[in-house]
Image (cartoon, rainbow, N blue to C red; front, side):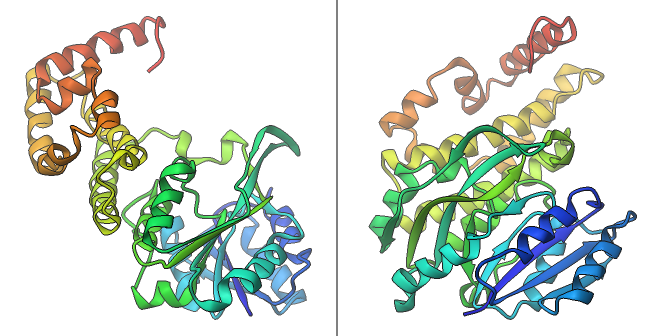
Length: 347
């Protein structure tokens, strides 16, 4: 059984060796590691080549800069393994990361019913843990109803990483699943939504073997997003969310984690349209246009009476947005923006 580890790399000379050393230290040795250099201008490519020269399991691919999604797609296009493992170039994995998955596959996965395995994560900065580990219990979820339970009763939808789980390559290829290269954030969330539509089962392992580097300087999610980025992200993920909800027929209280994330993206899209330099009435028209184009009112009307959704949407801000009271909504934004500028409130 071969694992393919895919590592997208862009200007990570400071962390890359630590990452690749953790790959070399794996107890389970039957793997290939694809190093995808995404147009780095520092020493990242040279470091990658050095590891490939010394260990034939490492292969280097160099491409023009196109973003993490395109880098991971190149890795998927060249993968040979039975299972796909993603590792970010500023993160690390413990020596038993692959071996725990291999053991779990032997127990759960030989019957082809399990298509996705999860592990836990550690959060570290400068070599020290900065918050509690995120873990799952050791359990199997087979069939639509059990997967639906897993999605609703765990916090997986709030931790939609790409790297704390492995994917059956055969399934990715069969359904032509790849990262959306128009997204610079949440592309991993979108791929997970798409992959979850086709799986037969999930299994979780109890150990936290993936180490996330919490250094703020390394995280794109800390950067400001343009309105175009927010709009594209909301649209792509809203469509994928609705498809997944439809596939599993999640039209009860279990829908709330999906809706919460979708609503946060919707709210982010509307906030991103606000520009203090523009006329407020011009902005209202933009909001009305985006609402009519991107917000699926029919879907919302189908779920809005579900008790926990109704409770979640009962606040004034949510009522203004779905009620299309854009003038009040803009005045609310304007008020908060003024407080922010006066350093009286964070937004």
